[in-house]
Image (cartoon, rainbow, N blue to C red; front, side, top):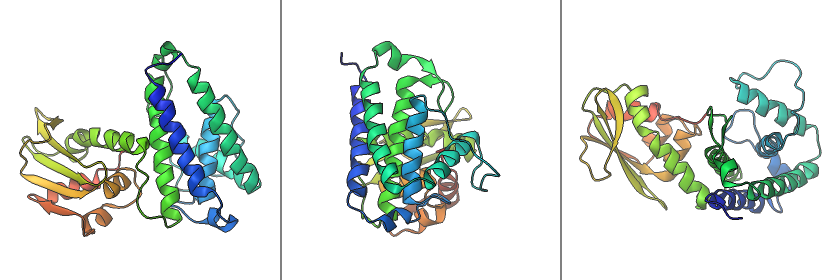
Length: 271
């Protein structure tokens, strides 16, 4: 029976299918290409996706021995690293087949969920959340990793599938928090963030009553950041540093440059 969350399953299926397309026919050496993630290759990103989905399917995590690398800083990172190290010891062909089988099993499982199961509150990496919110985060994670793979392999542009809409929506929604809590901008501060690209958007955020709030997209703002969706999501996901975004020819700043710079520095919102 169809539910209100079929779009989540479709978006995951399309994103995972795009990953398959990007990797199809690639020589083995391409899987050793480094990504923007410290210590992780193309192969490791694929292993992470396999391992996390298998964990959600109930499979026990592989054991980890010894110290974790310096870039592992939280329990989720420890889970990811244990899985990645496990798959480094397995043949590449086995990993690729595991990705196909594991994602197919996840999609089949999700299509069998009832409305109540989608709306049940439980564990997620963000804390207690409805299951549909957790699976939207799986779209975000998978699409960003699709971008990681494309970047590592030198492919121009982004994939503009449904995952991009989830990513840009989530990161755009985080802007009031960044301005109000990360930057701690003064009362009355207003910043517009204009994003140009396939899914162009304009966000205006302000500090009102001591907290960050979102205003109407056509609201006036004394300061403005103009950049591309591609640079925006990569910064929010921690794939590039603030200077890379601000110094790109596609970026311009108007008004209080220090305030806009602080917003860009505080923009990394992905775990």
